[in-house]
Amino acid sequence: MNRPHFVTQPYPVIGRTFYPVISRHFALARRLHWGEAVPYFSPERRCPVAHVVTEPCVDCKYTDCVVVCPTECFYGDERMLYIDPDDCIDCGGCVSECPVSAIYQDSDVPTPWQGYIQLNADRVAVLKPAGARVTEKQERGG
Image (tube, rainbow, N blue to C red; front, side, top):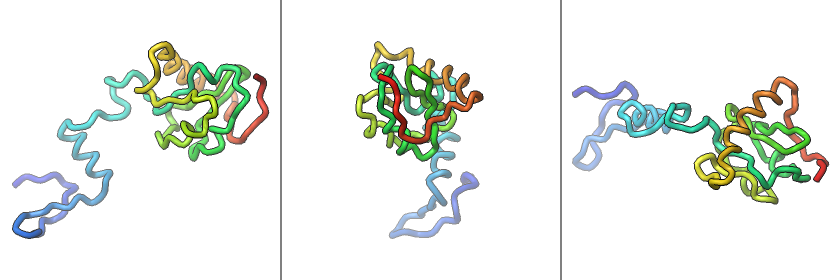
């Protein structure tokens, strides 16, 4: 029998042969190999962003969401905050902390705000080299 390389040796479990998977990462690799999952950075995705900051954040004075981000993936200018598409790990911590409900997962962004998906990626590309990372709660205009 031809088995994938990440499955350990079989052992019997009450009348069946069981092939335990070493970790959840190998389970994902198996799903990717057999076509059961779409890779995160695939052409089928609109933009490789896990979470997106949208319209309610424009001229917002709150930065509570940046404090809980474990990867410090927020960047900001005088207008609003933006999430780095390369650094966001899709933890969702910022969603519940945002007092104006401006953060959505990229697949759940309301139709009128779909343009903010690409805007986040474009603005971070400009702000990242400029060192505009926001990691602490700040007083902002608004």
